[in-house]
Length: 222
Image 1 (tube, rainbow, N blue to C red):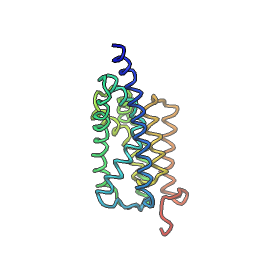
Image 2: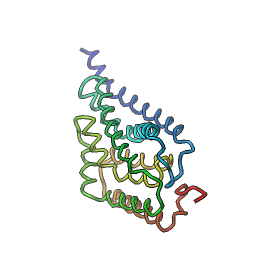
Image 3: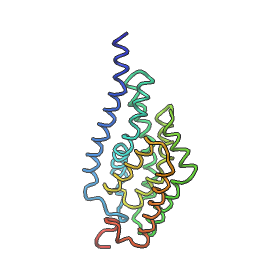
Image 4: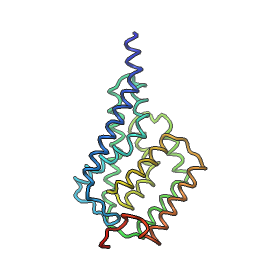
C-alpha cells in the first residue's frame, strides 16, 4: 500500500519533468529546422510535409510548457503515468489540425496585411470569447482534446500574430510562447491584460506605418 501511494505521489513530478523535457527537445529541433527560413512577411510555407513537421515541433515546444501542469494533473487523477501521453498527444493533435488551417492561409504578404492581423489579434485579447477560453484553460478540461480546443480558442489571436509577422521567426516564436504560457498558468488581470492588448495593437500600427522599425519584418532586398 505504501509503495502504491509513493508511486502515485511521484507520478505528477515524473510527468511534469518528462513534458518539460519533451518541450525543451522540441525547441532544439525547431531551431535546427527553422535555420535560414525566417524571411519575415515574405516567408514561404514550403512543402506541406516540411511545414507540418516544423509546425508540430513548434507547437510542442511552445505549448507544452503551459500545458504541463494539466498533463501532470491528468496522470495524478488517473493514477498512472501512461495516461499522460494520451492526454498530451490528443492535445497536440488539435494543434496539428490548426496547422492545416495555418498552411492554407500562410502566404507571402506585405506589412499592411501583417499589421492588420496583429491589430485584430490585439483586439481579440479584450473580447469575452478570449476570456471564456482562457478561463477554461484554468479548469479541469477532462481530456486533452477539450483542453486543446480551449487552448486554441485562447491563443488563436497570438498564433495569428505569429503567422503574420513571421511563422519561422525564433524571436516571435519565443515571444508568443512566453505569452501563451503565462496566460495558461496565471489568472486574468485587467491591469496586465489590457496594457498587453494595447501593446499588440500598437505593434500592429507600427508594422503598418513604420515597418522599417521592426527588425526582421522584411528581407533586406525588399
